[in-house]
Length: 74
Image (cartoon, rainbow, N blue to C red; front, side, top):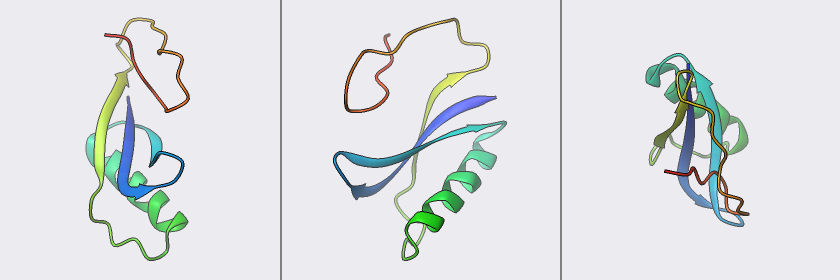
């Protein structure tokens, strides 16, 4: 399993995103697409970005405290 951050080219307080926990990138894209289409009825599916945040085999970690989203320590 992999945790993805899915983004589109819309902004709110910062950029619009959702997090997806999925078995594959293909599944994650389908799930994110459905979530964005549910929230934004006029969204045409373009501009979807996917970033891997972690996998089920990553070691334990904390993110950097921040009010802008998921900032993982390197």
